[in-house]
Image 1 (cartoon, rainbow, N blue to C red):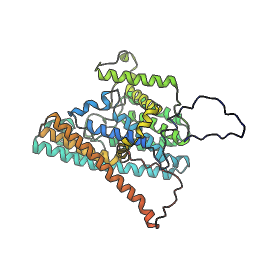
Image 2: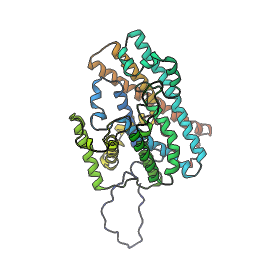
Image 3: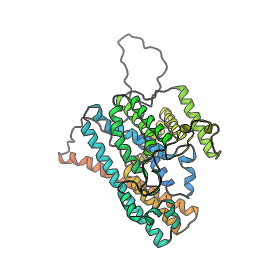
Image 4: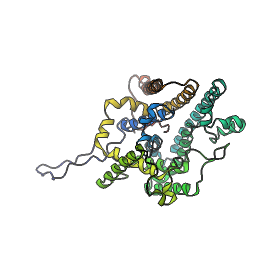
Length: 417
């Protein structure tokens, strides 16, 4: 809560307008337990959105975020990931305890890497079974399983190298790379956020102008999510998280900017919903800004997710709504992002094979997807209980006296998303 200045006896209070709650520094901050549940809600919504989109052809796809603007849940999730990384790991950089901070980041990257290898292996088994047992050829082609068929040995080598990625299994490799980038960005960012952003913007420009990408091996093309492009939205998340740590607004509230952000969000939603095609005048811009490719994080997609974030954090009603009891289950999903994302990815690829092997109507698809969403909540509930039990164990061991906590840590669970 904001600190109120006390006044001496007899001093008349100054007349001024009621201060606006600046959500860039005030509402969206960790609470005394070390996290802000509204950020967890946004992350949880992105995870559920991703799960629905990862089962193409189901009617619920029409209601996900990608139908209401230029960006989708992927941009939102990477932005949230940057915020969570800054909140969780920047403390060591501020204290100049770099080795400890880097060690924590590397351990997190290792966890994500191992989870990716595990779910990729399961996905290969599921798609392979669908192809050879049930004749699910379309899914095998759509997710790049044919490369595994034609060049199995190289593909098996490419999996641990992160070069060979099945479709819908390309977010965790991106996030592993972004965690490595976070080491350098946080080192610079704790000294100058704007220097960090200048570096990130320069790399983004370089990626678009040269079309350089990480190699997809075995294969002719690069990664679906080019880390050199997507690191920019991640850096924006880092900048926001660092601003929370320092108590300074990264982008202070401006009525003009707020109005422009709302206008852009509404216009882009209308444009996409009406399927109006290419944006007029975009072709006249330099290629750097005219590109609409999701893989390299197109300029319009970046602007849209930033405008949407600005609207969310500066609209009091949205902040209040996300903090209500209605969204607590969604916050639980966000708190357990890695477990939810990993299980959801495996379940989604299984459902793709299932729907191709046994075609069903829209009503059945909706019922199955809703059941899958319910499973996500159950998984989140299970891991939430495990975490609470782990936190309670030291207190039980000390006879009910919980050890004193010196600082609050932000134990974010981020998965890509």
